[in-house]
Image (cartoon, rainbow over all chains, first blue to last red; front, side, top):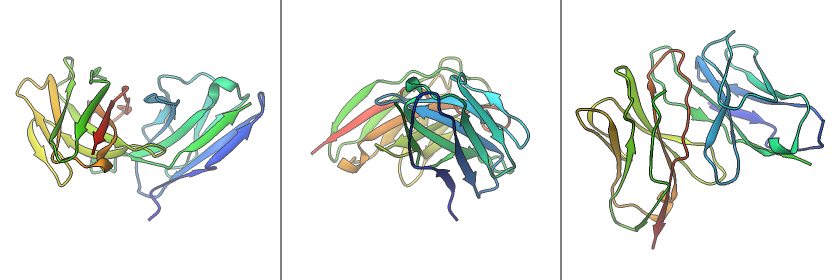
Length: 114
Length: 111
């Protein structure tokens, strides 16, 4: 039982390049989330998906797009990376059908845009 | 989501009990209070969740007064390994509610 798996763990991009961060969970959770965390700061919500087929903007969605591919997978895409997007990105999932909303987080993707 | 306010940082000696208070004056009737712990270079980890009065598990206790406008996370006899950032979240237990984190409280445990 892997929980929440994020790939890649580290990435360096040049300004203007694009990439997709992958996230998969094996806990049958309905809700999935993408956060970014800048050094010494709290987590800021980028996008979330309350269920398969739905996505909603969070606090800082500009410059990102997401896809809820199926119940297990929720990807985050940077179409044209900027240095301001240098951060650690965390994916999380929560809410099994019985209502338990404990959230589980992946290990993070450390992204540097140069 | 109800906005939360926590102290930015706290220091404690090993073996002491630590109480971190969170204010959430605009908490709604169906909102629950949840606390997460985050170690450096890791994602947050669920600690405890409650609705009213007191909840206790093997890690911590959560005290919620009758008006539910605040809550207190209590960590008994902290050790160096409890040094982390602690986040208080308030929101509906299920449904379309996103998990929004504030800045958290940075707890430093000193030997």
